[in-house]
Amino acid sequence: MDINGNDARPTPRRRNRSALISLAAAGSLLLAACSGGTSADGGGADPAAPAGGDRTVTVWHYFSDDNQVRLMDEFAEKFEGEQDGVTVENVFVPYDQLNSKLIAAAGAKTGPDVVVFNGAEAATLALGGALAPLDEHWADFADADQVSESVVHTIDGTTYAVQGYVNLLGLWYNADILAEIGVEPPTTMDELETAMAAAKDAGYAGITLSGLPQSQGEWQAYPWITSEGFTYDDPQADALAAGLARVRSWVENGWLSQEAVTWDQTVPFQQFAAGRTAFAANGNWQMGTAASDADFEYGVVPLPLSATGGVYLGGEGQGIGAFSDDPELAWEYLTSTYLDADGQLLPAEIVGSLPSRADAGESEVVTGNTLLDPFAQTITRFGANYPAAVIPPEAVADVQLTVGQAWSAAIGGQKSPQQAAEDAIAALGPLLD
Image (cartoon, rainbow, N blue to C red; front, side, top):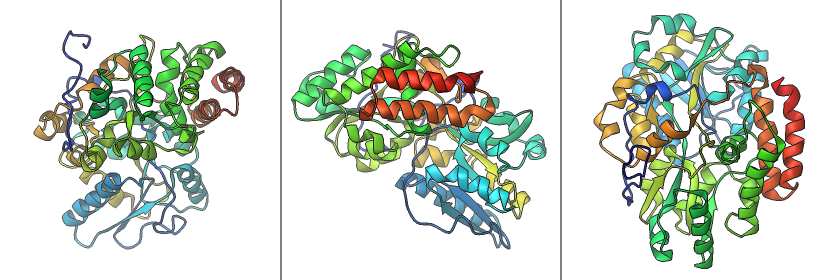
């Protein structure tokens, strides 16, 4: 049951077309955020090449998931259809290379026209000189009042990026497996672990998640470590160690693969969609993948956290490259796609991301499906600012790396949870001071 006494368990869906719940009522709860999106090595145009060109908008992104790539293509088609003689060139850059390539390009006074990036790293890119200020554009944007202020990224009083949608984590479950082992979708940590043990006994994997030693790992770790009492306001080694130890125990019990240390958020959901895993700690953006790839009944519930648990409210940020050849055209691209009311319905339909505009959130595309109700509950119960407000802007990347490395080291067994936690706390001290 949810906090209002309503049934918190959504009806399982088979190949459900993705759609969303309106965020109009929850808009004030959507804190400035981003998601640790997907990444993989892959092709694409040379990201070191000069951006722009004659009526060309070059967009750098890190998406490799089929549905997210399709979204980028749909945005390109939408904008090209609205502009005469305009070409959009989407350029894939691996997630773990995007920031460094953007900052290096800015140092050479080049780079893309538009940047789609991990919104939590807005400070890293802004302070690195890779993003152009948006103050004048944003002040003149007629629909700014439709966009929640919580998704506008401002660093030292200057606006550098806006999010066209919001993402967050939930607990996906394979309803067929749960029916076979005779358990209900879990609402507590004890119920989750009991269910994973039963799933393993029946020949299934327990859970998938990302254990990468960087910001994606910190994004994935945050709910579990805060559920054990960890906070950036008062970081304590014992609380961090408790969270790390719990997830390490999942590896030792055979519920979670130790290979998770090599998985971004795409790979574990692909494994879940293959049908041999009971649970996946993953996001609303996987709705399209679930609809297209899962040949079983599935559903979502909020992560079964304690009262201290928090779930980052995320989503990619969108900005203009500091050395765009045509920043006005780049802004027109953004207002035609990510910031447009109809444009925001494309992530809803294709990926399953929650619109950041109030009017888009009221669309039938959003309100006509209840599968995302657990994510709306999570916003209310566990929603957390991403990055945490206490982290100095210039330290965000190092803090995320530090905790992501501790998370990965504990899951992979390179360090004991206690040692990983103590090392992380020692590194966090000067970063948070």
